[in-house]
Each structure stands twice: as structure tokens, then as C-alpha cells.
Amino acid sequence: MAMYIVADECISCGDCQPECPTKSIIEGKIVFEIDASTCTECEGDFDSPKCVELCPIDNCILPKKAA
Image (cartoon, rainbow, N blue to C red; front, top):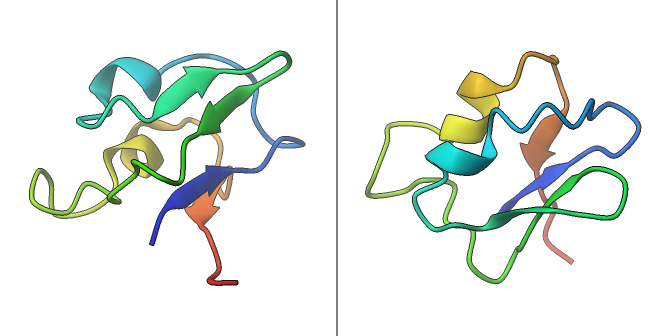
């Protein structure tokens, strides 16, 4: 599975981007975005998604629901 950023909540602070071990977080046109094809939810690198830990906004980065 992968994480995603809730566009209405993101303040584009960029705190999450440099800590992503898979470099899946990119700066979009308006807010940051997570590439679901490369996001591993930090499995194998951290105990939980590092982006969620670093984000100053609660519920801004959430697990992407399976289609």
C-alpha cells in the first residue's frame, strides 16, 4: 500500500520530502504529492511512515485505500 497527501490539508512546508527513504514525495504544482508506485510506507526503513511523523498537520498524510 502507499500513503497520500490530502491536498486541502497540506501547507507545502516540505518537512516530509527530505526524509522519505524512497524519494516518493515530490513537489506538485500546488502541494506535495506521494508517488504511490514507489511509496512503501517506510516498511523496512522505519517502524511507521516517517512522513506522517514529521508532518505538522494532523490527518494530512493518510494510507491510500486499495482500489
